[in-house]
Length: 379
Image (cartoon, rainbow, N blue to C red):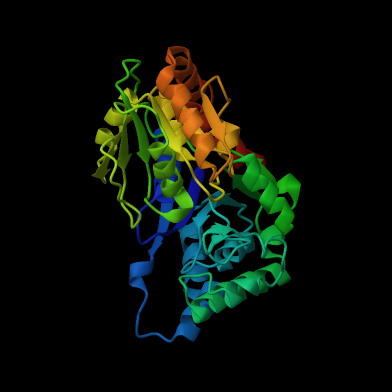
């Protein structure tokens, strides 16, 4: 199979960039021919007018021509779009379809329905724009980068392509990474029969350890939507004075006087996995709708149960009492109670169940078969 992928890189590399590379490598390693078209926001000419940048996000003539050129030279059988915003634009759908090449679009955020792609603003979940053809509230609240003009540009892009129904007319299949994301796509007006659910996976199996040490782990940005403040408040309520909370990540909300919280900053993936494999549990206290929760799967692979909030796709991953525990997002007392349970009980069986969940659903081998099936279904 000959696959052309298209991706607009993020300025700060994150989970979406990593998941995209995992998929491309999976296909290549299994004998398929993958060619990639990459764009980077760092290439934006700052001297260009904001109007020209906005127009480009709606319809990029150069991307349209480049995709047609690549499809012809590569003889691509499918175009897999990972992230088109802002430089590639939905024009690349039209380029592929003009050559009768089917299009698959991965959905790892809420860009098609929300100008800031998070469904989160001003410290709370916001779904005001879901289902709206013209998401004007995104402009009113300066949702994209806190800028009225930038928010207007994103809103214009969504309004144009909602109006001409580009998503349903020019995309053959959407890959949603959770049932929650699928539900939001349907609420936005995407045809349900076009949506396939395929979770993210890891590039390799890190192996696991059931030899746990006396600490709980948090891994992620130290930002409001990630719930780190709720976690710190819950930690202050605990009776245990010996168990430590290790915090791996960077952000503006770091800081606590507790002697049992250790901020470790950003670590390499191998170092993170080492701490993860020896933790009693990982905590994912998100207060926004995490589309999936890749870090949950990473913990499961390492044989570590997860305490997660009931937000977005997280509850789909965790079976309470079997491979982890759940709590209401933002509920400090409830989170503290769940942490006490993990600290005070023998969680050996829960750790083994977490590992089995990874082997059953999230290995590279299983993910490859799912992705291959989706490609074959639209070719």
